[in-house]
Length: 154
Image (cartoon, rainbow, N blue to C red; front, side, top):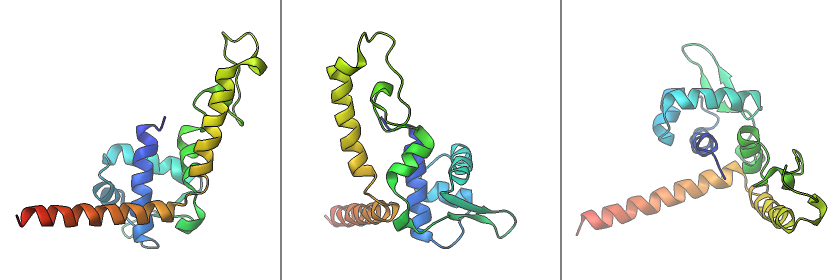
């Protein structure tokens, strides 16, 4: 399950991708992404530490993507903030931890099922770039705007 932190980060990063290479201040990102500014500031720190965002201090400072949006995969963003993609730890490739109530993890059908879920999720998020997500966001926003304009003319 995606946390609110990861959802907010993805929305904020789409705003940065749309403005790239321009620097945006946290306040502007929060407005563009409809994210609480205080929460966003802590998210930006984590994204900077993960090498996804670059920041510049000062009056003309702000935040931008550390790499081109087409090189940043959604899966990398999610893992940087939420950790492993697996829905349960025993199905994780990188953070495996056996369930305390499981007598034999190798014979557990639930673990195998959750491994398949992990693989399917990874297949999608590891092959979808931030650029693709930002483009889809803009496309859907234009569609919503056209529908609202059409409705207001009635």
